[in-house]
Amino acid sequence: MSLTGVATSTRAAYTVGRVEDVPPGEGRAFVAGNVQVAVFRLRDGSLHATQAACPHAGGPLADGQTDLDVLVCPLHLYAYRWSDGGSSAGLRAVRTYPVRDVDGDLVVDV
Ligand code: FES
Image (cartoon, rainbow, N blue to C red; front, side, top):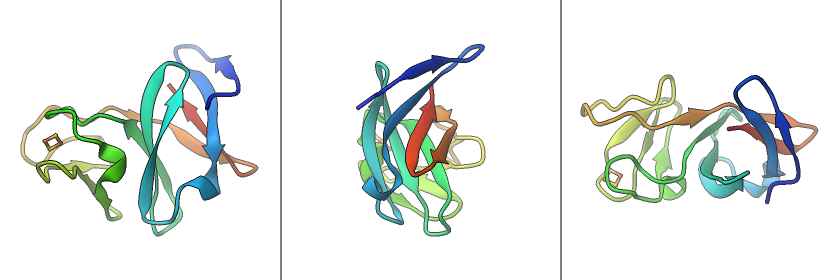
């Protein structure tokens, strides 16, 4: 659910839900504007957002396993780094988006 789209220079900020909508260590799919995103809350409390569909073959990244360094797609188990979205297997990188906690709201810039 997007509530507002606030344009910045090349991105728009969308409130997609509440931080508590994403259990620690898991991901959830949301729509930010017209962009499907996957938002993750890692066990250290950090937030990350990626495109919802895996760039390899469209797997649902929100259902992937995570640790503090990588996201693992549930379909073929390829891993993508949080740091830059890159794949250790040399696949096309996953698109990442800035995400932040604003008074408990999840705000994603797409
Ligand atoms: S669809 Fe994600 S690794 Fe293949």
